[in-house]
Image (tube, rainbow, N blue to C red):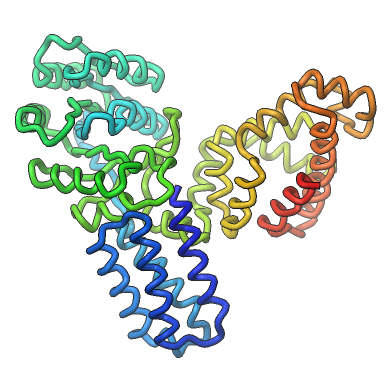
Length: 450
């Protein structure tokens, strides 16, 4: 996500950091580059103009140019302003003191609203809450069936009465059922609309009146760029909503919607969908997202993912094997599976500081989740003896493994070579000599290309 914008901004910031001293002309040149980068990212023109003006004022007016490291100080200003632009410190959902908390979902048809409803339910269940979903989108025949299927997959209680009943009545009934069932949260999926439809807006207002939601979330499609912001602005004029759930953010290389929506509507982004799977929904942290855009990584989110998805006992066992130089291909396979729980490879690596340029090389080298599939297939084609001691894999063994995994002998040789390099790096880590992550990736790329 934000690939184009991130590359442009990181290039500009890198140029500033490389200069010993900065003049106002240097800052103005950088501001022109930032302005172009934001406009190319489809950020609202007025938002872009104000952002650049605010950054320039702070960069020149607070003694930045006379500081010991002016380039780094300008980067700090840009980082802070980006975070502020997207909502500052962010905002949490409001949970009722007397459950259930009611969350009303609204949005245009095709924005991913029904899927987002199920994703949000799964996310809240993962936080230890019991959740239900109410299928009140009776306009689209497949919506009720879709939410029923996805809601069950998410582990939520599904409240549905088909498409014949009035959606307002369904919502009121579902709220009563959720109370009886003692649920913590009820998420109400409403009808998507092709445009700001007066009749459907009236229906939405009536559902709000009957269910008294604690939060109304507008689902907007990040990939529609400035249109998403226009939709949010129109919704804000017709009906009050409390925050935005940004869908399909993983497919948005530009980022215009995410950067503009708070400034235009005054409503923060609360959640962002970062993939197609139900578990790929994250709380939106503006400050962390700003750091990722500028190539600073997102260590806090990476730690949270690791704590949530990785097994603590297995991690301790891995550490023991690393220290004693007993790490095998079986252990490597376990780690591959653990990393995959955390989401797409590009997403996980993108949270590591200093990985911006390396990520670009990764994409050009076609290293992605399919590569992990191939590695897993090769390891599973080995015997227990071969996984424990890869040094025995030669000649006929390589050919057998390649045939069994649908790869080739060169790929098998490369896996063994990379595994050997990994064990050496683990020895360094165990002894406290932690390698630079970008250098580590570049080393792997160089080995792959040879």
